[in-house]
Length: 437
Image (cartoon, rainbow, N blue to C red; front, side):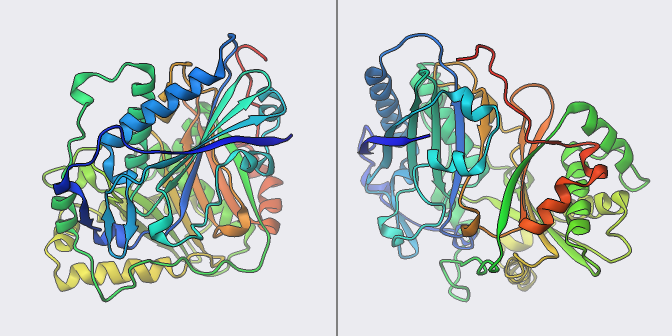
């Protein structure tokens, strides 16, 4: 498969950002976020004949309009601030010398990463790094894969979902008048979580161990999820969620694959918007998230119910009182920040796992005018990333969950051959298109 870049263009907002919105101090939560791109790929198997030139022109124009609403994402990180001077996003057009179905029959990370527009590590200085990099990949069959690298410094899952939904709706021409303006005030938000000089501003991830890593996709169907929830029930957690049950299940078998004999830690991303009083709207831009941290002892690590109980306890800890302590900048609140940074510095150790869930974010409804995506994927150079990462995404069809898991190569080999794990998980099944190209 050859991916040939046809053009590369900078897309600036359709209207200039007003002078009073030109510069904002980044929040503490954004300060703690690394200069790392989040990868996403949306596959659209277009079967009708079309002219790609106007299609690409419409995508660029709608992106320009969307950047006007999300003007922060068109800016650049300069020092400790975001400068919204309309530097814009990067849009790349590329051709792919195969049919889309050739890739989707047996998805492979090494193939998928060729469709990404850039490296996941932000190697350039922050002030030169675009926050949004897009590549529109046109297959021989006419299908299009929209791949994106979205800078994590200012974007968590809720932020990039709002951005993508707005862009797709604008491209489709279905953006209603109530969505014309984004309801957020970044200055007010960043003042709630003011940055600090005590911690380094550009938080660096721990250096990955010099071991080969593997990214694999496992699919858990609705029946498997129901069975896992039943197995995870306990007196303390009588009705575990799908995310809690699946997170505990993967954590357990990850530790088994690593032959973890001692304690283990799992950090799970929590969206703070709805937990704050008053709640922030989901369209609020920024890394408005925190890490719920669970620790397991050697005795607990083999028991699914116990692990799910620990996950639930870690979620419940991030409550209104916890957030209020952070907001008022108390000693206890700052201790929580330092504790979180200390936990992140352990990431990459064999007994530390990092999980994020993109469930119920309606990514599978991102419709640019070509219908819902046939598949949503992630990809990347595994040598650039820390091991022990779990990303949960809704299946495009049905009520299942796709779990993208990054482990050391040897541990992944053990997991792939574990019959107890494969009783519930399908290893990288084919994606069947409704109309084969």
